[in-house]
Length: 318
Image (cartoon, rainbow, N blue to C red; front, top):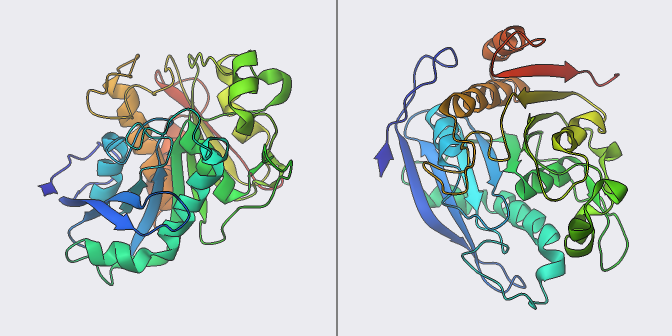
């Protein structure tokens, strides 16, 4: 189907219709079931950059339309896997794959990168139009950790105690939306017991560029620290990083998880539009496409003068 997506004022003047195809199925030996994707791409243009978009816990390839559609309408090919923690596979609580869900997500993303030829062939007219040197990873909540691992974040494997480097040099930058921060005594007892992949994150190796997006009213049941916990990927990681803080936004940042999604507790189209604007500007900037909109966003959102949010950045040497 072709879906025209309207522009957000001040970002990019024109949009193009988008074609979305699902499910694109990748054979996945050892995973327990094949990997299913949704691929959204502009119907025109060449040298298209790629965004791998990891959903939050329980969601699927059908989520995050406000972001996937917007990015695709402005020139990106957006690939959305359905990870094993989705309600779609609906794994039983005693499934032996459960403790490794965090790692299987990263393997899903790498499998997509290994199979970009299949992705291209599955979408009519897409073959030969990808720029494989311009790849970013994005993710919301649990998906933000997935994207972060591709950028260098290390997670101590609950089974082995090792914190291996699972980063991927094919991924140049990331967008981490309302995702987890420090472990240890920052976690609630529930999180420490049931989500072992949150216990010992190490951000010191996450050197690749990233934009972190946090809501200052994000009251997660995973941390005792409050909303500032989701800013940790910016605060604790080295390298070039930026932080967009949305004033008054909760975990779904105004409704990024879907059009009319029931889990959105703080529906706010203005917040969604700001996330669309800043993430698109950042992706275009960090993938060396055009930095004009990013410079404008930095100017408009500096300090606390904007009613919706604040944008700050640090350099690799900071």
